[in-house]
Image (cartoon, rainbow, N blue to C red; front, top):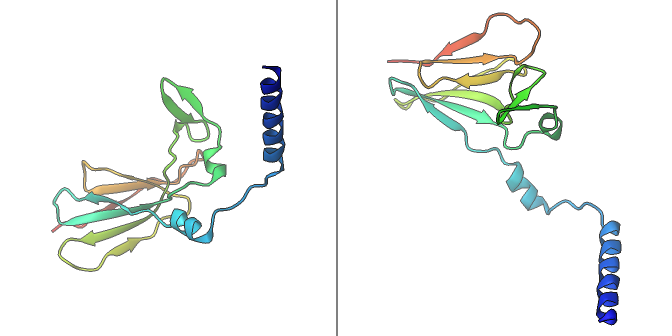
Amino acid sequence: MRRSIFLVFVLVAFAAAGLSETTYRLPPKEITQVIDTAPTPEVVVSPARDAMLLVEYEGYPPIAFVSQPMLRLAGLRIAPQTSSRQRLRRFTGLWIRRLDGSPARRITLPEGAKVAPSPATSRTAWSSGRRTPQPARRTSSLPSG
């Protein structure tokens, strides 16, 4: 019995020593490329069903963004910097594609913009997401007919 306890102790000690000597290793380049590939854009169809909005977003937000302080209140995560809900998905680009076969048109966003497509209307709004006073929010109409 003592011998088996001693053997387990020795094995655990060697395992712990072996773990402390390992360094962080990156996966092979092929796996990193698959993980870093941009995700498929979200699609929001216009109420008239004649156009769609393609919303591009970050697949994995940076650690600096994810580690920002947040407040937990009744199951919600509140970002104190913006006094709003913490959003971990950040949109990076917008495309409007008419369903008549014409080519897609890219909408350039202001630096650091946050996009909020509204499924109930034909408009999409974006804001800077900063606490400092900003000009009125800009909106863009989805093309109709």
